[in-house]
Image 1 (cartoon, rainbow, N blue to C red):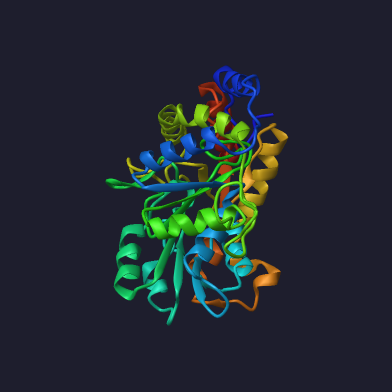
Image 2 (cartoon, rainbow, N blue to C red; image 1 turned 60 degrees about the horizontal axis):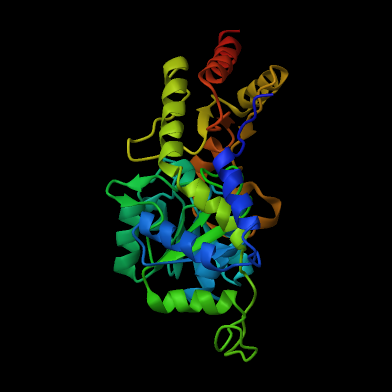
Length: 356
């Protein structure tokens, strides 16, 4: 089976975790996690970073730290992982679903049609940056909180500004199918010291001081472990290598498949998954089943948020484009473990399907 995606775990990663396990540490969050936070913050040119158990919690904490609460409206793109909108609901706010443009990122034109919003979550979907910089300027002019859900986009840039540095707060995810992984894990980043302190307070029971059982107010436990961070640090040391692998993977597919079906990336964008644009939902279903018979695993792209049954009463803009395109995208095998022969085998199978 050629997997659609899988983690790239090396002997160096295993050695990093093994060294930590033999170090006599208490496993929980401590020095290695702080080292990981500092290194990720430096990489994207942020002042502060806060590690948390996953990307969903990262979005939730970004909203809470920003003061988003009951009665506030938060714009979210119609094509994104479900965590993005669920975090808004979890925070007690009201989502407003906004259409995307042909980059599959939030449409600035659609966003401008939403009155009286308090926050925007911009998603550089699949490593593409869309109108992120323009939306940042729009939010700044309108005094709207901007949060960047950069779960897909570690390694991509907005020209000279790295993904993970947009808005007042940004987030990353480190699940097994991300460009680097800790198994699970997320991170919130900011340049604002007050927001940073709020994040620390919320994730550590809002203690009066470290190890104290006197609390300044309400807080929860959203810490991770140094065991995870030992893997995260090893993975982060190979990030540039993984970026090259992802770009080369897209280049190989582009050499083997018709450009009509593959959407391009800018040089400053890092492909997360290889998206194949079918001409219809039926063709996507048929191609998915055909490739499965060839032991090639693929994955449908995220369905539009507006198609989810429990979100039918959510406020939304005209979603014509996103509702159509989301049903036509198939994610091809996109792992950094793929060999050239694997890509050629997948490409040959796709071409045979199209020819027949």
